[in-house]
Image (cartoon, rainbow, N blue to C red):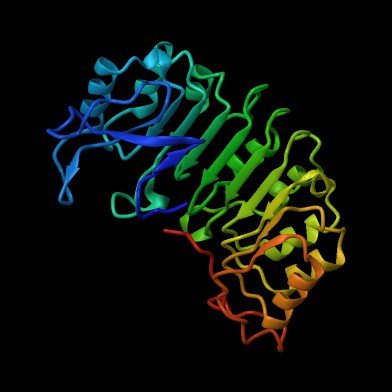
Length: 318
């Protein structure tokens, strides 16, 4: 994941940018079903010289969208009703299986400013999606999902509304294998709490889940304590509590809870763990790929038992 460069690959296919008519030297277009088509506003030298609507119109007129399986949506103008546009052309994408809404870079628009609104009608227009990624959660809303096909769901946010987290937890997704949620900061409407996502830890609605990412959050210690005895963990192949405010308290819960030796990967990068705790984790999980990169240093308040408000921070907020 990066907010500083556009996707080069999406859901297993190379991403190819379309921002309008090809320029001299661009070469022929690839076959429609062999790449992920990334539609973007045309930009040169940091200046917009086209609109998303213009780029999308050219795409519709020059690519056989009936063969397109992967679609990436980049930055769009504020005055464009993106969801209505995509709903109106849904019939032209009968094979669409993977959709990324908002491959928007930080210089284009901060993640906490990306607005989606209610995407329930959009998801209803594309019921055969198997892979859905959304960046940005300002005003994001949808009814609990019901899909027999969806295998991957990722929501990247600088602030995830509690209503969205509860909708995910209440969704009926028997085929879902991969779930990532970025919780973000309360300063950017990140109202999600542990209680909102606790139903996910039972795994009852997610029988096929193999990866769980509960990331970029302020309550990582509480999550770790819940995961220590959560039924969903036993069937996972990878688990992530990365990018958040994880301290030795949460790591201790992971170590003393149910075994994690069956995992292929445990991602804890961007953490606040002591050096001793990091060594304990590595020693306890010798066959697991444990990502402890980007340690932010051991908080100096551990000895006194309470944190000042500014001691910890998440990786992505604004």
